[in-house]
Length: 253
Image (cartoon, rainbow, N blue to C red; front, side, top):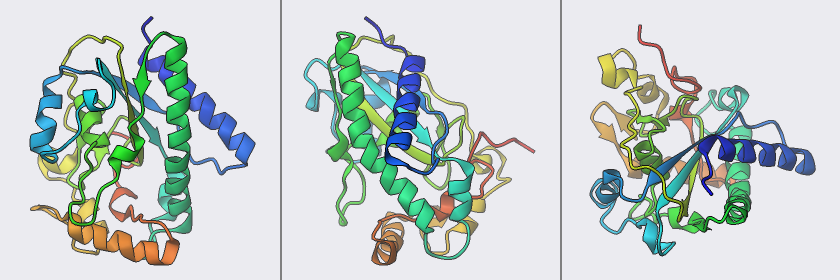
């Protein structure tokens, strides 16, 4: 049996709504997005070139892997607005980030069981996204996978701009479900890359991590560590909030 992306979105949204009620959580999230990526998409073969030479491949987690299910959990606008003032991340932003990450591990297990009931084997490589300070690149890049699944395009802040913007968290599962191979690449959404009409994310970053020349991961990591000292959370998000692309695809002027 084939699971469709729209069914996955409905399962995610219902699960998060139930979890919000059970745990009395703030209303952090908008409706999710999901997309499948075929195991033999040309993008899979580029991961070790674009991200890091030891990037994991789908079969590392699931022998017989045939697809990757990518999904995006977008934050509501108030979460982003809370993070605009000051140099340090807001408490609300940190809690939204940490809560989403914590729940995502349980959500992944739920989706694995949901797919199992449909006769689909799946694996959830949650821990594979952890990186080290000497090489702050994940061995399982959620955003690159989502990009190859056609979910969005990269902004100059290195975030993926989906149809619901870039404010939120990307996750993925590997499955043995066959999906059609099609190169589903998103149109360009970053205004700077289109016509250089916006570079507000660079202005938002006061820590030297972003420039028109590129993204300095180590400067970004340094600020994450400063935030962790005060918030007990390795977060920042200043370059993601208050932008034309934070909550939607920005309009070309």
